[in-house]
Image (cartoon, rainbow, N blue to C red; front, top):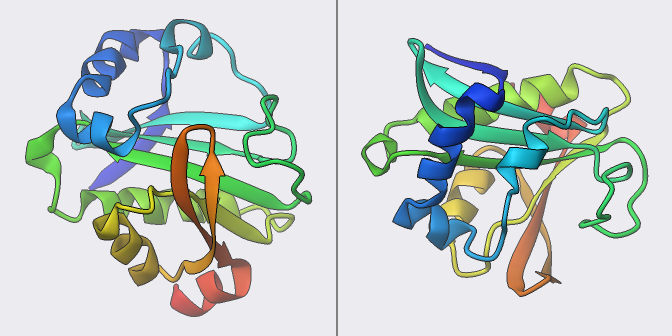
Length: 166
């Protein structure tokens, strides 16, 4: 059983280690998460979570409100959205269904608030495995978009599709 808990400064070494793993770099090569700063900063628009399998950390989930997020990464978006970043820390934990469980927990967290109408994600255009993963969860392709140096696909899961799938 997987559970999500708030990431803390006690997770700093683990998150730095995961950040150096080849599969994590391949999925997010151009971002500096600034863990030392960000783990100590808990704005109302963001949750940073550690996924644990029977008390063993296996992954990371970040949920943001893109309308309030301070860098405006998603641009000018309406209220009522959430955006999720998710990754598994160790290569050996890939392909076991943990990501699906993590994403389902994150989606339940997002949609537990009635004000949330949809969730956004932005995998690389080249990450076909991620595209299939999100499509299986009910996300629909919206557009191809450049975020900084990264060519991404934007996917969206509206509340009604989430409710229909759950």
